[in-house]
Length: 204
Image (tube, rainbow, N blue to C red; front, side, top):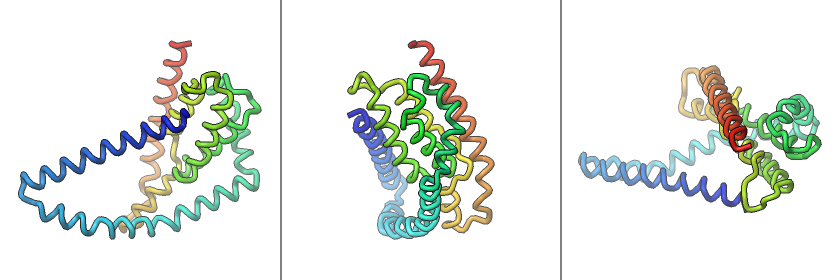
């Protein structure tokens, strides 16, 4: 129930934001007398979107395959064991042998590689395991909220998807985004975890 609630809130907010942007663009086109630009964009955007998706598929498929190999070979399990001391402190109410911690580790690893699509299944499985130990089934538990913060503000070492998009648009240096991405996501991660810790401590 909680997962559906989070999904509903997310998609509702995204729908509202995109609807607002589209309406503003249409209104501005009428005011500025550039309605033809909107018409051309509507006619060509579908074709451009399809080309972009097709250009991203090889990169996403490659890294998703690598993540699957890492999962089957036990590499993700080793990575999870490395993160376990950190996760035990971050999720003190979750038992140390709970499957959720393994899924959370896998989710972090996928996000570090910039693979949101590969990280999503691990995130859903982690939420399912956290829901099993949740005393109030109709309310998000503290570990679930912390994981949501961790997933949203995760550190990205290799922004694979962004690099693929830059390559699709013929960027002169597609990988130049790596260092700024590490700095930006690292900063957001530190502040997000710090704020989450302060709120948890206050309510505790």
